[in-house]
Length: 112
Image (tube, rainbow, N blue to C red; front, side, top):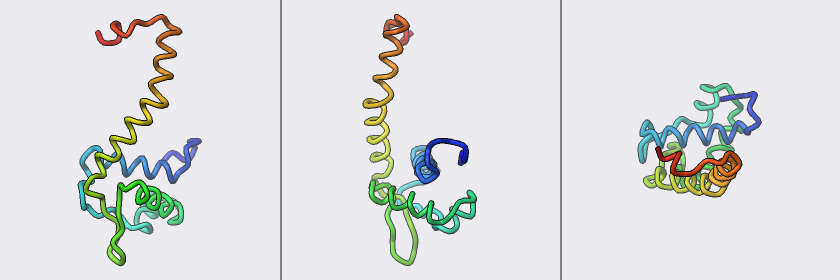
């Protein structure tokens, strides 16, 4: 975690878990650390981790089995990819295209 970042810690935790899923180190139905375990590992309040888990649950990336813990959803990877693509197309790509236009870069140059 980057405690000096302007990005909230709970979103950094979501990003970290999402990256683990995308990389394959967390697979469908794999158990993720409990709220307390994860908080102790990275040195944050369990309430912060809980907020992350609630967001990931709402996004359909993880699910909770009461009394057992949190697990990676079967379609978590697809959901994360879909969300990242949407964010890229809506937020990052327009900025890249604007910068290319300002610099006079032709898309063909980039493809080389």
